[in-house]
Amino acid sequence: MNESVVKKLFEKHCAGANMIINKNVSAEDGTVDYEIVFSEKRFGVEAKGTRSDVYSTIGQLLNAKRTYSHVYLLAPAGFIKKIWGILQETKTLTSVGLMAVGTDGVHIIKKPDSEIYYYKPPTKPPTKPTKKHILVNETDISIETHFKSQPFTVSDIAKHLNKPMADAYHRIARLKSAGMIEEVSRNTNPKTYRFVKSRNTNEKIELQHH
Image (cartoon, rainbow, N blue to C red; front, side):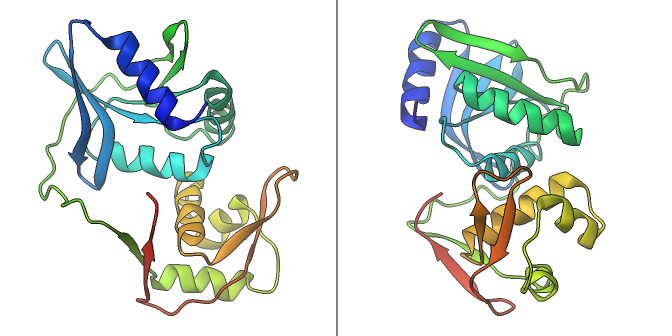
């Protein structure tokens, strides 16, 4: 089930519900797929399909948390199970909720743990460019220098940077978006990566897809 089908099913099942659902809403760092306004509270929702990348998904949830205290991942049950396994393993994003969607309806698998509610309106709502870009920084180059001649995992990145696993997942997503790394094999556990292209500090990489 791809992302567009997930969104169609979600909108169909929520039609007529006693809540406001806004689509493609500006957030602190980009956009969220949906904003739900219910009982004077706002919830961010990121929608994903079965074949979505788990690392970029975690990065997007982290970005959404800058605006919404309560964020849900909306996806088919199979992808929810995959994400839930990673979140449990790394103790990451415990305050994120999980919603599975199918032809039979929308099911809340897990509510956000956070009891503190806040909504931070974006200070600078982003314009919607025809192309997005990523600016290579010194940390990207530092990782390339260290791992250029050897395969590595997300855990290796976390140890090298002395950062939490959530930051390492976000960094993997950046490096993949910049075309600097690729997965060595999709059958390995944990996943292993290698560098395939060098970049320069402050090099601007234009992206064709979100």
